[in-house]
Image (cartoon, rainbow, N blue to C red):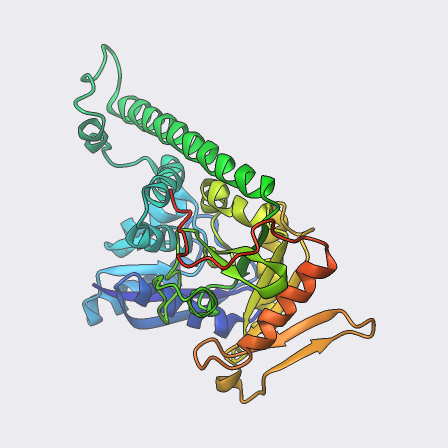
Length: 373
């Protein structure tokens, strides 16, 4: 599928880097970005987000380049999406729908798939303009339309029932996670969560620290399912480290809500390793975006160590940096090259020791475990 990307500059943030990120997202979804259309406005147009003149310009470009999809780098209202599709005669999706689609492609575990479907249905419920009778098949042949019920009412009822079922499944999975977490707490196991902007290198670092083989790739949202492993840190004993989904600017609220059960591994951690792509020109903005999501899920109070990754690409040296009080501020590493990993392990052990969290089980673990449900 070939697409045109549309970005509107409202004079806020780094517009160019945001468009570059959209191109990466589109490629991650398996779509080929062919054209990029830029526009400048003081505020969105109520009817089509962009003005009618710009819409006509895009329509001409679509017909000339034979494109079949338009992706907006913004959240569109249901009315704006419908009006654009009528004017452009092609499918139009916004940034939220694009991210949801990538999540749907990448989810591997049962929990991840349930979370993504719930987020998709909640988003699409506001855009109920086409038939949803495929939900009847998923429900095992639910009854036909009731007397006097319109198709739209039937679709909404089926959708509501599916959402209720998915929420029930998520509640059950969340209770299972809570049981696992309480068991770890009883054993006084120090827990660490890797957080950071998507594609910062969290999964590569996780694999290096734990000698695991979780999927890691140079693409956005390579990891969706939280995976946990034990690692042994000498006198500190065993600690549990969890790899989590990456964050991104304007992360859809439906996803944050749906993935709350998974992200609770972050909320209940003793320490967050905030992985930063040191080679990114917008790393400071990415750090701020991660902090925003952490606040939204209630994890902004948890101590953090900033881990500046990809120092080989940024031409930096591995070092453990402290503030004027001697506290660890940043650790510079390259997970890919393996440099600085010893410094990071030292930083984790030092923090755990300083906070008097020692595992009761001080023996090395030969086989790691996977906490995915």
